[in-house]
Length: 163
Image (cartoon, rainbow, N blue to C red; front, side, top):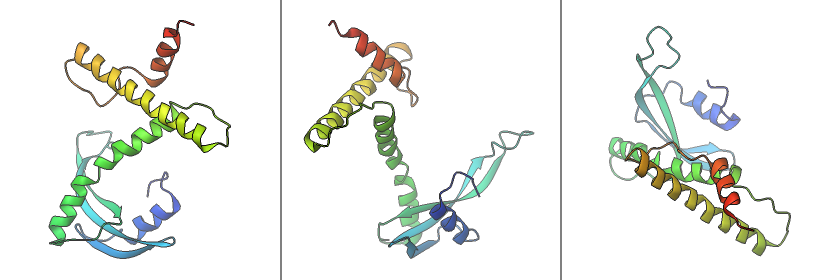
C-alpha cells in the first residue's frame, strides 16, 4: 500500500484489495458519510521495474464518488472512470492558486478576502493564457506542463509595473 495514502484511503484500499474489476460497493461508510466505491482494473507501465521499464502490470484502481449508479453497472463504471480524471484539472488549478499565486492577507473582513481570492483567480487565468500564447508561438501545440512557471510569471508581472 502506498505510503502517501491517508488513513481513510488506506482503509478503502484494504477493504477492496481482493475485489474484482467493475465491482460497485454502495453505501460504504467513510467517516460520517456514506459513499460509493467502484473498482476498475487497468494496465499501467511498471515504473519500478528497472530491468524492463516499459513492462506493463495490472493494478486495481479505486474510485470514490457520491453519484448514484444508473443503468447497467459495467457501463456506469466505465463512464464514471472516464469522467473521473476530468476533476483533477479543477483540483490542480485550485492547488496552484492556493500555493503558487498566494497573496498574504490577514484581514478578517470576508469582502477583502474574497476580493483577494478573485484577483488571484484572474491572475491565474492570465498565467494560463500566457502559457497558451507561448506554447502556440514556440511549439505550435498546447502542452500539459507549463513553459512559463508561476514564480517567473509573477516576477515578470511585478517588473512590468512602471511605478
